[in-house]
Length: 344
Image (tube, rainbow, N blue to C red; front, side, top):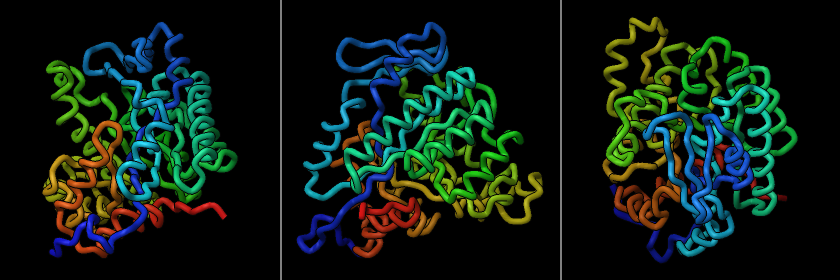
């Protein structure tokens, strides 16, 4: 493979970061008023401690950097490229499915209004996906349609589970997937913290963050395949975070056990219909994801502010892709897959 990299003099381009987190402060202030889970508390330093449910594996300490969009965008300006971002928001908006249906609707609507406001402040540079409270299918569809049709958001978030107990392959969610497919929008599949919570606690979150997340996104994506959802919805756009977790490495095991699911095609065929990002702490992981899914199905992502955007770009350079493939992953693929458009 060619060793050309983004730092070459003739390589000046826009970059789309498809995995970028900004969280509206107003939503966390609302969660601070709750006495039951999920809830939040101010840390007195501009950030919050957030609990989805009881237990250390469900506690997150969020610094002020998660909530200041202007500083985040200014940070992107220091990279030396024009960086556009996609707020694929991540797990916390998804936890509105832990709330009672109408309360979940209210929080999701507040979140989505804030996201739409961010799009207006940064036209053609920031796009955002919607939160939907999947605990109630009818409400989820109503919130989705408002977010896409009225607010102009570009996609929606899909949690690894619905609330703390129900899975995303639940039969009652079929109308939701029907509507998403009709709208032609992407669903961003991001891990939550509900898979094996009892064995992921301790070690200051190291076990959960290193293995829990990739297991969560892997199992959730497999459910979309084994349930037949991907077969029944061939045009459904699923964007898996974190290179699809363990799927590129374990797809062969899924194919080996395919008879149990009764699918007409090998599970790996459906997995390769999905899309993913480059969020991996090692260049070998990114390289294998590109080889497994195909370069047309991979988008650049930094997972900012979890990870340094400068480090993420440097790591991407080390993969050693050709200039053409770098341009696709850094910019072109996201615009095509996510339907991103510059303002007229």
